[in-house]
Each structure stands twice: as structure tokens, then as C-alpha cells.
Amino acid sequence: MAAAMMAGSPAAAQRAHRAQHRPAHARNIILFLGDAGGLPTISAAGILAHDRPQALFLQSMPHLGLSDTSSSNRWVTDSAAGMTAIMTGRKTNNSMVSVVPDGSGGGVKPVKTLLEYAEAHGLSTGVVTNMPIWDATPAACFAHVASRKDKGDIFRQMLAPRFGNGVDILIGKGRADAEAAFAARQTSPEHAFAAAGYRFGNDPALVGQHGRVAVLRDADFSPVSTVEATVRQLDRNPKGYFLMVEWDMHTPNPLKGLRHAVEMDDLIRRISAVAGKDTLILFTADHSFGLRMSGGDRASPLARQVEAAAAQPGATVASNPVISVTDDHTGEEVIATASGPGAERLHGFFPNTRLFEIMMAAFGWTEDR
Ligand SMILES: [Zn+2]
Image 1 (cartoon, helix red, strand yellow):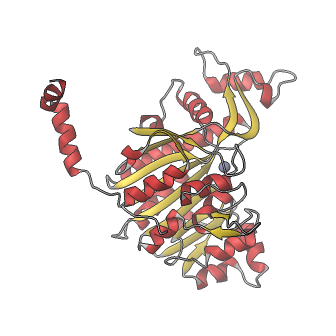
Image 2 (cartoon, protein in one colour; image 1 turned 45 degrees about the horizontal axis):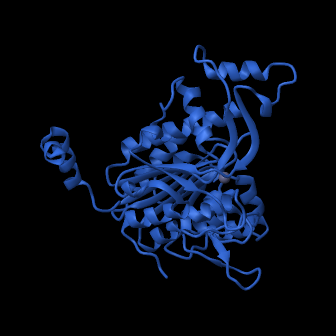
Image 3 (cartoon, rainbow, N blue to C red; image 1 turned 60 degrees about the vertical axis):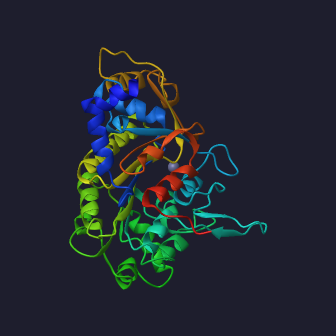
């Protein structure tokens, strides 16, 4: 009875119409990874920016769930094991990047990443981060190392892909690290990236001109224009694309970290508007972080109250009565939110490895076994 009444309503007709025209699979996936962007950070960032609750764009996304981030050997993960789970569907030990122990006592074996599946299927791929491009989160998309500190091997693997022709657009920090890593192999990043078919430089405006691009710099860049240009360029591939965008939200300084969260939210809002209905947009964090909102008066801006408390004699970041931070990863579930084809699979509590399965299913792919 209730169903019959609902079926006759204009809203139900509209839903049925949309369902008919919704693509079965995602053509593209954009994974937004808020590094250390746990729920306490997201929630406080939204209030800081808008002075009302739940005003962030990602708090309006239609599907959500809660992701367990524990690693194989620790309740509290690092970014390496956290991103490995999301990119490969396998939990591993902290500090391991897209490898798992092979059972031989100390040995490891690589696990194929979602980005590698995308390359193998002929899609275009991109990795954009405001962290060093060799850092654990971006590296887990394209490299396989037992220790996240193995910068030299991560740079080597960046240009020696196991599937397809490797990441098509690479944007991040760590220019000086790249100079050192390639110098150790008697070459330079300019030569090595050019030989691998990239336009190489430090200006994000290189993206969108033509072909494969690697932008490595040590300074910040504007996320919206850079990611928009990346999406436009990747979208030229008729088969679609996979793009991972990491924005770091770790910080001992709460206001700075929370502004990064708002910056990423603005980015997701903007990119969701331009990405097209055949794009699965997924936001999650690799782990949560020791930030707590313990006070605050609704009558005045929250940021001003945090700053006033911080200016009191003897104040510390950890004891701030409005927003306090202990500079540590924490073990509670993180939120994942999504829109687009396949987003409806995101619900309830689940292990972080489910995010890999959701992305594979959205593309309509099955795992190699
Ligand atoms: Zn992290």
C-alpha cells in the first residue's frame, strides 16, 4: 500500500527516471584521500569554516560508511598500510607500501593496485598530492616496497611501471628529494622523466597542454585549478581514468590542519560539479588523528576562540580547551563518503579493504587471482 502510494508520487517517478539513466558502471573514479582526515578533524573543520554543523560539501554526499583502518600488525595504522589497504584490498604491516608479507620470514610480495588495474585496462591515471610524491600515500598507488623510507626505489618504480605506461599525470612535492634520488643513479629527474615520455617541470600549468606530465616542486600549489586541469586532460581518454588526490590534514597546529580540510572540501565540491555523472567520487581518510573539539561558544567564530585560548599563559596545543591536538594517528573508524555509479555500495561499518572492492566493482572489474 505504502509502496503503491510512493510509486505514484512525482519524487518516486523522478527517482525511477534517474535510475534508468544511471550508467551501470563508472567510467572514471576520483579518490580524494584526506591524510589524517578523521571525523573529529572533518567535523571541527566544517564548524571552523562555516560556524554551523554539517555544512561541508562532503557532509552532503549521498552515501557514507565507516571504515576500519587497523593494519595487519597494529591497531593504529600508518599511511603506508592504510593506503595499501585502500589501493590493493589487502591489509599489510605498517610501513609496507602495496606489498604483503610472503610468508617466507621477512620477505614480501607486491599486490596489484587499483591504479595498476586501471593502467592494465587502458585507462588514464593521475596522482596529485600536496605531500612529497614519493611519500607513502601516493607511492601506494604505483610502487611496491617493504619500507616506505625507500625513496630511491619508489622513484625508480615511478618510471618502471608493471602495467600500462605508468601514472600519466604526477603532481606533488619533493623536487629536492627527486634530484638526490636520481643523482644517486647518475642521472637527473629532468632526463629520467623526459626519457620516460613526460613533460617535466615545477609549474602545475604544464598540465593540460599535452601528453604525460610530471610536476615536482617544493612549494604549495592551488588545488582547484590544478585538479581541474588534471581532470580535463585525463578525461580525453575515451576509456576513462583513475585519479587519486591526496590532501594532507596532519598538523600539530589545529587551525592550519583544519584549513587544509576545508580546502579539500572546496576542491571536492568543485570537482564534483565538473566531473560528470559517470564518475564515482569517493572521499576517505587513511587513518584518524588526535584532534578533539572539547569546547566553544556558538556566539563568536570558533577560530577566534581557539586563538584566544592558545594565547593564555601556559597554554599548549594539547590542552587547548576549545580544540586540542595530540600529534598522533588514532585508531577509530574514519568516514568514507561517495557519489556516482557504485557509490550505493558504501554503507555501514567495513574494513578499509572494502574501498578497493567498491572501486573495482564500480569499474566492473574482477581481481586477478
Ligand atoms: Zn596518513
